[in-house]
Amino acid sequence: MVAGLFRNAGYFMGDKLHEPRHSNPLGFFEDAAVNNINESILAPLIPAATRRDGIVYRADAPGPGQRWLARLPPDTEIKATSEQLDVISGLTNQQPFCFKDPRFAYTLHLWRPSGGDCRFICVFRNPSEVIESILTECRNVDYLRNFSISVAQAAEVWFYNYRSILQNHANAGEWFFIEYDQVFEPNVLERLAAFTGAELDRDFPTGTLKRSKPSYKIGPPIRKLYDALRQRAQRSLDTEF
Image 1 (cartoon, rainbow, N blue to C red):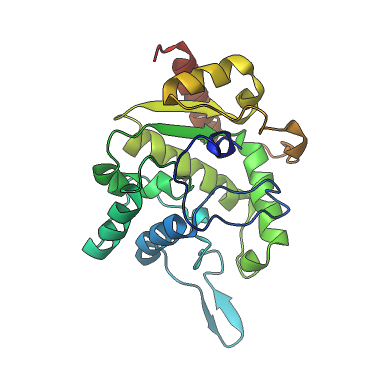
Image 2: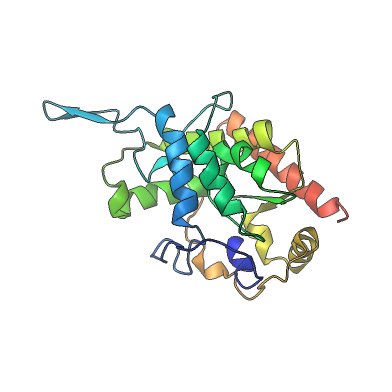
């Protein structure tokens, strides 16, 4: 939804954006090339699922196309080959660009050297809603049907993604943190427009697509991280750009 605010602002978002589907009927605003290079970077860090004697081992290990569901501790060393860095450079050369990919939570440091003076937007939601959204997606989307995930593991996806962002990425550069529900507040969009210098498509966000309801209890570590994200969002609103 936040990426859709920039759809008519003149940014290169990719040559092949994923088609809309039920979970995102207005589009994902994610490019296959951006997803694929991040997938290839994360692939060596995630043991593959295997089948032996009719039993699937490591069914909870995300495979190709599924690594936005990775659960990597923030001290994981994530590297790229020279060929992968060349692909990244080729994509960031098409400026101005606006790229979205949840895998950036782990790979952003590999994009920054060729990204110029780009600014970063971190979007987050109530973790309980995200857990429900992940489980619903895994139940209903064909490319995830061979992937097994529990409630606790879906919570880990949320936790490790945002822990990595705060610990590894958000201490450098210009950042704007925004919570899902804030997108419907005109004053917040004013601040986001000032931060990016972009003409936002303010008619794009619609609350009718909010279908995940918070129904899962979250533990203290996740609650603490959620509070830290909300504090960063308040700092974004308080900062003059």
